[in-house]
Length: 319
Ligand code: CUA
Image (tube, rainbow, N blue to C red; front, side):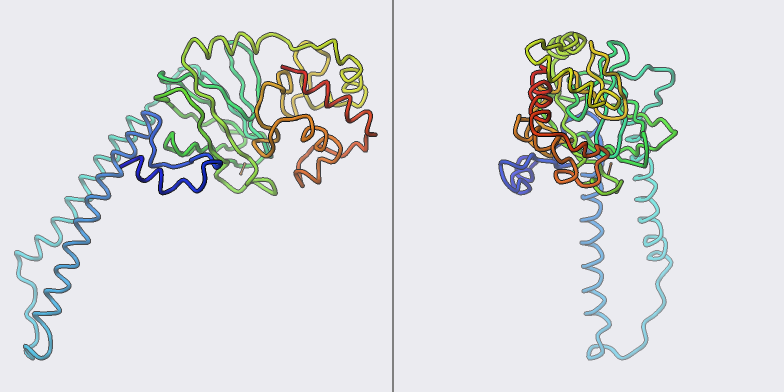
């Protein structure tokens, strides 16, 4: 059934599938399990109501019988109140059971990754290794992990449909989410609460890896990416004050307002999934940010072409 639904929902092979019906985490499995019971109960209720409606239409039709109908017998009254009440009680129990499984209390557990939503991009911090990255978030698969969700500005909403539940990201408040991703792979989501002009371009990509690959990735990301081949670009990057907002580990650029650019070239996309990461898109973006992503907080610095190219070359070397 999941693949049938999945195929029906897949608009085009180029569009990454984002379906709640394809559960890829233990949490999503629990939720879908409960959803199945809801579907069965709803189908049963629909059937009973339809049958009773037709029976009533037949039994009390004018042609057949003109006498006024008698009040409902006690037996029917008990049944029509009792069965729905029982159903509500059963589903309340199943709901609480599922909530406890999906969102057990985290107590003093330290989060594995801290994710901060910004207008309009995602920041991921890995507390134990001090790695910081943006938009393409690596997580370990086959393991129960705890995410701490924060917001830097307005209310955003974390949602990877294949992982099940959503979670609001509220300024000034930390929310937590457990996730146990079943298989390594790529999973996609989008901010799920309207948060301003570029809400629809606040895409999320999760790269789930087995534990060895994940740990290797963290080790690589701990290294600063310095590239002497583009020293002029690096110099311009600082001169034009890019480093006031962006951080490049191992340099004096230590800004935290915009996305961390330390290993920018190792990401597949730019601007929270809006564009493919290549030198052409990067150049166009730096040349005129408001044309590419209107409303984004990166100002237009009116840089000349040579400067833009130099900075782009430098950034695209940050592997
Ligand atoms: Cu962030 Cu919508």
